[in-house]
Image 1 (cartoon, helix red, strand yellow):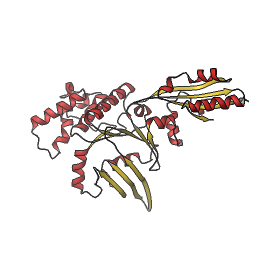
Image 2: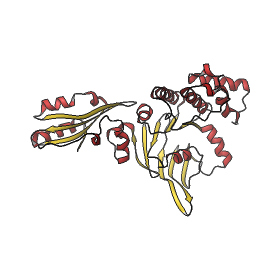
Image 3: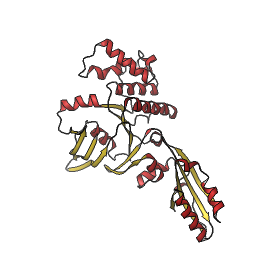
Image 4: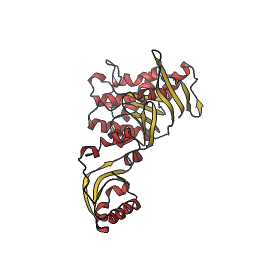
Length: 336
């Protein structure tokens, strides 16, 4: 799926407000991308545009190289049911219906002519894949939050969608349940070849399941990169603010007071470097003293990211030599 110069605006009294502006984005099979940004930045509108719920003011949406922007309402409804699955924060299940009946709903409104026996067989299969087949005949209001979200995911997957859209799908869950739901989504992505697009404020979600991150501000994508690059080298204030939420001590949280004859440096380690004794090697190699001010390691889906804030003391020559050595060791650094 491709989004090309996508813009969405609306009228507020006599003013024209832009919710999404000139967005260009490719969505890839078996990849997960997170849409992040402050409240009111246009994330939900962006998700609605992707899911063909709202029509863009300008720009094009291509699915399998076909521009679907000018499809009729009926064509879009058919495409939404066939191509997309949707998971919401509050589950959107119908009380008084069983888990089976909730998951079955999309099949009832699809163009597929499936008899009840085959529908139920298909529903049981998908409930089994989300480990909820033993709750198939339970009223959903009797289920826990995590169980309800599993039922919601089963319903989103029942029509074999290509793209799964999640709007804060785990924000109402406790950390343990969130972890199990993320494992479930990762399993579904790999088994069904899904593209997953998530709106989330939870950095743990991004760490565990996402391949890429798009940072949105004022309706525009201001930063788009792999999770590894965003964590190791955020380019914008918004990205840095989100990343700092995971750090045990950010630069702002510690009182950094540089001593004469020293430099304070933020180091970022990617992959195997995150687990190497880089600081110890540097001290042995150069005539410098190192004071570790803060540090942490974040385990991402496919690699590790380490962050350190250190103070290096010594002669100017030795400090510069140690900094150049760090660069040659592929350690990203920033002199604070």
